[in-house]
Image (tube, rainbow, N blue to C red; front, side, top):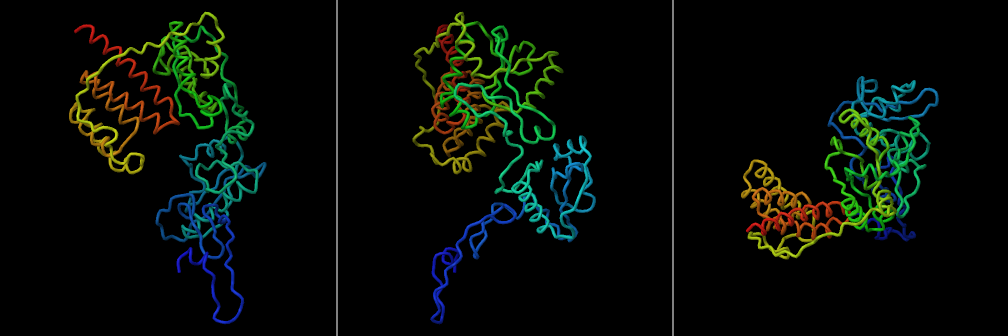
Length: 423
């Protein structure tokens, strides 16, 4: 009998005893990586543990913990064989950092295990620590059903608010072990907006909704317009010699900002102020000398000649996974052709990828670069128009992607107009 039969069919006794009702209690498995359905079944998410099995048949695995002597606090859980417990862990960066800063030791949770049991016990121990103690684990991979992830924003991080810049935050590990604190972005100075660079990290859904009221493009476009109004020149690279400020569109770790500042000192010999887009928007709005540069969107008629099928004829529309599976390899092959200078062959492969349903900003970026190389502005503008239309629908949580294509289209239109004027 199948699982659902076991769960939902009543079990008849051959005698006249009362019917037995199955235990339908749903709970998490002890290792935190699955769901227990009563007495009948266990549904696992992923493997037995959090690590990757090697396939070893050895019976000498163990599970170990690194802890701080003074407090007894466990900061890393691992499994291994031989001298693994005392070796340097290249990928456990935070754990190794703690071993340098504190007086630490090692203890074994279990020994003489096969690999499957070691993985299971490792996951169970992580689950116990994260659910039942206040210890702050530095393991990057943790079981699914745990109450805490110590790489998340610290509990002391202020909540997001509408039209209010977030802070450069710390995670629990940084705050707990290193004493780091989150900090505000720098106060905006108009004099530092002459050559800003936008730090375009992915925006989380809650940032889009709460900070920008789901209208990120409005704030971005207004800031761009006002910057153009005061003669600012936006630079593309963060460490350009002329860069005057970094404008973040979203929140970030304070430690990432520290690293960027160190690189700025090394490369351009000075500190670069870090602003948030909302603070820049407020500063420019509040300054009476700043005027919006009205966007110029001229009416143009393009005549692209191509063999692309209409959007309505694209296969796998609305099914991103199938479109990716069917078309990605053709885009990949096309990129190789484009980089090798075989532009027409590249475009043919992009057409195939698109027709099979592959849709991504990368595809349209490749298209635009290919047509730009051919100086075919009609087709460049056409594919950018389609990119904007489809990305607004398919990637609504990536508004900066749409804005990037709009900026590219604006430049292509300016070139197109100049081209027409010289004819």
